[in-house]
Image (cartoon, rainbow over all chains, first blue to last red; front, side, top):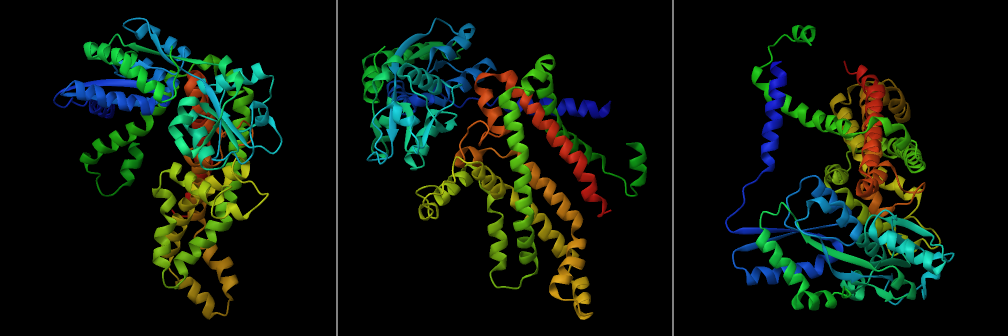
Length: 246
Length: 265
């Protein structure tokens, strides 16, 4: 009995560790899809400059992982997902319906100079080509499957990665002849990869929704951040990063 | 519990119970949380799904092969590190610990830049592709698991000392005979527990595998990779497979651990 009490006390003490105190000033927590890393980091800097004393905390990960965290009571003000499916998973937690603020589509990326001479999606099923895509369970993999179906092509990937950045890493390391990533990721990789567009990509466009959470500790700031993302400054920054307009 | 306490001659300070209980809770409570979260009725169906079966089979095969390689390569390394008087052997002892300290993802990247297409060695191996193969999974597992065997075995060898070996030598035994008849039997228990730890570590390997070998069903997607993938989309499936991993781990410990320790008592 006594041991049980000790265990319970320990568990309580451990639970207590989780709730750290906020430092001075206000903090806005933004959960955003991994593909938004570059653009949201820039927008967060701008937001902090416009709102002295406000600290924007960014949590980048796969949209499904973020949705999972939110469903498990993670505290956040804003959620920006790379697809509507993951936003719908947390629909009950939103203060207002999510709005689409950007679109993204797939592109083929190859190591610089395209050594394997990849010209289209069909080449990713070609014998001797090492292709890497996302697993069908994650948004970029679902889009890849859709694009391949549209093109009537069978992809023969050497690996199905967990997220789009992992695909990019394999291509940049020269360990894959071709990979399927979002246009925005190819843009962010700069000279590290060569992008090869393909027409079927237009049939698998991802909508990026953004929303303020019902339990947002900083609801006012959250709405202002969403306005910034959807406003001219956000638009310009997202277009620069390769995203399409909603 | 109480019969065991009576056997201890020196009293156990009561103060130790508190941190010990916290430590135990830290290990046990998460597993209980996992069990509580699982939907037991759908468990059989989830565990027998084609993806899960492929992942479990691949995991068991690669971890077993990795353990054999740990024994064949790490065993001799431990002996050399413990017994050799070559200068610099102390530095080597530290180097062997590297995979224990490095995050596995870093290990995976390092393997990629050594054995990958553009890697230091890989670029000299035209026609041989290592990443994305089951061989890559095994290499990653050996990389992370071998130190467990080497460190345990080397410690046991040094604790055992060289007295018996010296006696055998003065009696005229050749080095190979001394190794086979004296050194190996001396460290058998440590070897056993080292192998169990290596197998367990190989079975749980994740970061180096996903970085170096990628993730493809039946080829490189081991059970931990399958759990990670499912955690994104199908939490119940991920929980079910996590339970499967726990069961396998407990089984390994239960079967092998007491046997490995018997000789030490």
